[in-house]
Image (cartoon, rainbow, N blue to C red; front, side, top):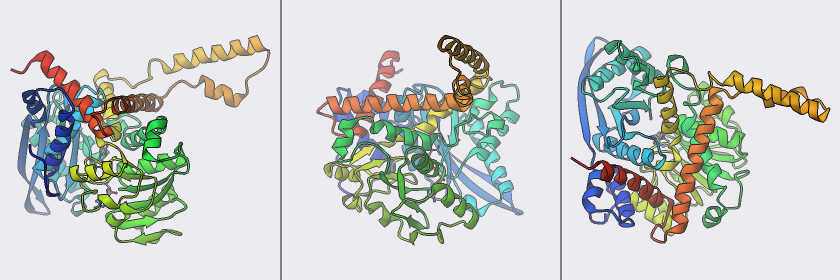
Length: 474
Ligand code: NAD
């Protein structure tokens, strides 16, 4: 592939150029590289659904980028702008993400070309069930080979409809619940999945700040507390990331960008109150003590410490990259920075925590949910009370030995057995910490690797290539 000369690259070309840059820093044979980059399969389905007495046609896609591990895993988005190239690019990102984070899945992604705001809940259910049947019949959805999850425009309810449709098609499949992740807890979901991607973004920033050499390189001072953050996107990922970073880490969200524009408050927005305001008024406009402006894209260029794009791909391009003022960009969305923009930002010394790591919290907890579904038991169910009993005995022993009594408050904290959510968050924290440590270690020890993104791709491609070389390609 020759170097691109314009900003007119498609999403999958952008991903492939970033991958090529990593391959150039590796000792990898070209044919193995080509096998890793290729999208293994993709289907396009077009199906009719009767809506308000009229037949409407819908088009959707599901791509499987790699099957070196099964099932292939990746979200399904519902959007009026979806296309095949985007789905292929997102499936590839899933392969690299899972490999980097040691999640034993291949990469997949799906999309349905639809504007959900034009349909009622019942109509969305009808469309989703029909789409699911198409995917199942064509071998693109099952607990063992291909497992979707939520993405832009989809959430728990779509996942519940998909799982239920699969169950009706295969009632004898005891593992039917594992056919999708991101389900409601009462339908086989796992506690902590809804906020997992946003929480993963928070953990990724926490781990970055545990690496003083990386913080210094970005030109930031130590610690998240008080850092000014601009966030683009206030959906599942953006809202939870913003909320957790303010509540648990004392960061200041100085601007929230949505499709309608940007809301700015230099003193920091109250995220919970803003969320309630949007639920009530369906807009950010009118939020007290904050300034609203319709030019959301321009707001990416605001003065801040950390910029978190958490909406769509290709938001920072060679058009605006030079004007970005943040010192750290955390890619909560998939592909928010184009290949060309990435080069500009690197030259400016802006540190980028790349998407294949930063937003991996979703697939990490999806992995936990899938395991929970296959094991048919809630995490912690067998050991929680036992842990509590042992801790109570230990507290008693401490009291006897010291002759002092432990306050009721402390006793409650000490003896409490871990809940499912505690275990999920602890597993997520561990995965995000280890993920960043791999990136930083390689970045800081190899002169050929100039940024964290290339480090991420090198690690991921190395792991995938080893499975190809071990098993062989036939
Ligand atoms: P969502 O549909 O819940 O929210 C999308 C948000 O983006 C909304 O707030 C919307 O207003 C905003 N938005 C849309 N167009 C915009 C524009 N032109 N300018 C500014 N804001 C705009 O989607 P989500 O699930 O939060 O996903 C966001 C990103 O994170 C996507 O790139 C997705 O692929 C990625 N991601 C999501 C998950 C997950 O678990 N949901 C996991 C990994 C990665």
